[in-house]
Image 1 (tube, rainbow, N blue to C red):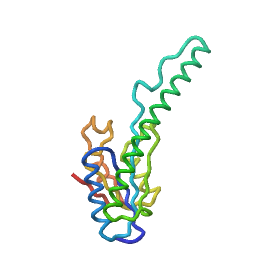
Image 2 (tube, one colour):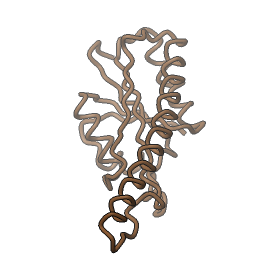
Image 3 (spheres, one colour):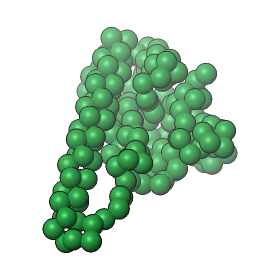
Image 4 (cartoon, rainbow, N blue to C red):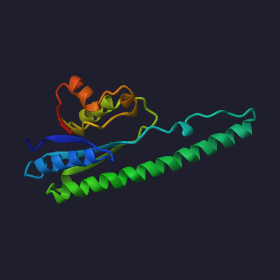
Length: 169
């Protein structure tokens, strides 16, 4: 693996994601000089926080909007704090395996309003950060893709031109 190799590792809080990080740690921690970008996508806004009904009264409408914004901000703080803890634990796991800390980056995809499929988001992030390898667990699913029983990794295999995929069971 070349010293300029970059690996995007898609993680969530599943046991499969932990195994994916274990695999990357064994390969990269074994003396390869790859850079690792841990990637976590925040979940979409829950339906209860999406656009709700309005008010006939302009002042009431403004109060509702402010209340909704404050609820969304509180929810975002919570999921972002969880994501930070998750990424920190995976970063620690990689360091324990011998990966130098300066070769590890953490990235949180904060676009909770996007309908972008996870496969496209992964390809976009890999391209943006010049990662030629994407590592993910087979079970790393987008909620919408899960409805159709299409695994993100299977979709990436079909569309992942120019990108190596490490799919962990």
